[in-house]
Each structure stands twice: as C-alpha cells, then as structure tokens.
Image (cartoon, rainbow, N blue to C red; front, top):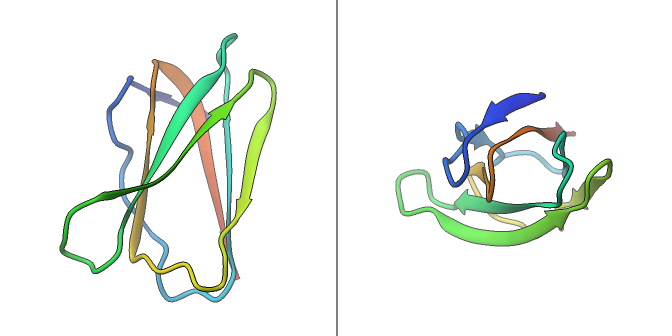
Length: 92
C-alpha cells in the first residue's frame, strides 16, 4: 500500500491460488497515467507470464474481479515508471 516502486521492477509475489473469489485494485500517486503489467505464475515453479497490462489515470483506480476459471498460484506487478503504488488483493 502506497509503496515506492521503481520502473519495470517486479513486486514481491503474492499467493493468489486456492481462493474461490479474488479481486484486484491498482492505484498510484503519480500525476501522469501509469501502465501496470500484471504477471502470473500458474504452476508454482515455472516461468512468469503476462496476464494483462492496464493503464491507470492519475487519481483513479483500476478494479478487476478475476473470473472463476482464473488459474494461477502467484501474482506480481510491474509499473512502467517510478511511482508510489498500491496493489490491493481481496480474497474470499
């Protein structure tokens, strides 16, 4: 939450597997739009894969409910510029 991030540096990985309902909210504190790359690792020990790229305007948040058939064990995030950002994951 409100963490300083460096351009193109991956975040720590977060466990996302084994939950029924998952959602994500991305936001930042930059004055310009920030493009986030959402990466997933589906099997627990394999390569990271790009799931989606999203551009978040300043002062707004991107919300994404993951579909029921979404399959991944781990998730992480990259920003295209230095910023303070929040990746809020909600699991139920």
